[in-house]
Amino acid sequence: MKRHIVVLSGAGISAESGLATFRDNDGLWEKHNVNDVATPEAFQRDPGLVLRFYNERRRQLANTQPNRAHRLLAELERSYRVTIVTQNVDDLHERGGSTQVLHLHGELTKARSSKNPRAIHTIGYRDIRLGERSQDSSQLRPHIVWFGEEVPMLEVAIDIVRSADDLLIVGTSLKVYPAAGLVHEVERDVPITVINPVTPTGRFSRARFIQKSAVEGVAEWVNSFKR
Image (tube, rainbow, N blue to C red; front, side, top):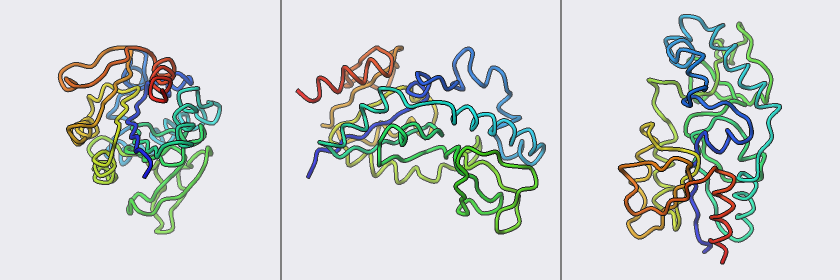
């Protein structure tokens, strides 16, 4: 059995490819009220606005490329079993070459029925139009887990983390629950490494810290891991 590396990734790894994050000082939430674009109530109130917001995110993603951190994590699959559990809704891990990626918060390149969360459609980078229907005649919506909605892949993610031989946390401060709770699911003797320019506090007492950007930190970790 190959050693199982589990990676928990967040917005920091995508930011280095040029994608705007949500919570930085100049992030998307500074320009958009979360209650207007990222809740079920917002979609019911003004679906056109919500669709435009995510259409813009999708267009930006179409013109964004994976960075070296994405590619280095993918290259680990040559020698190890690697599973990426990401809070990101972009597809940069997949385009970087990773084959086992679990998206906790949904995927920009997919849409779904407004009535049935299991009726999912792959749409790539095109817009979702107001009036565009799923097979159940409901308006298509972004396949995104909005605030106030359950995280359907959480239990799967917990099982993945519990099977880790090494846990790498990159580009996330793990402040957003329930995703933040995943770090507590790792077995007691499993090495944990946190890559983040700002060292998180409070919940990583036994972790190794690499206080660098995702690209620099992943390169350093991969180099030391392969020795």
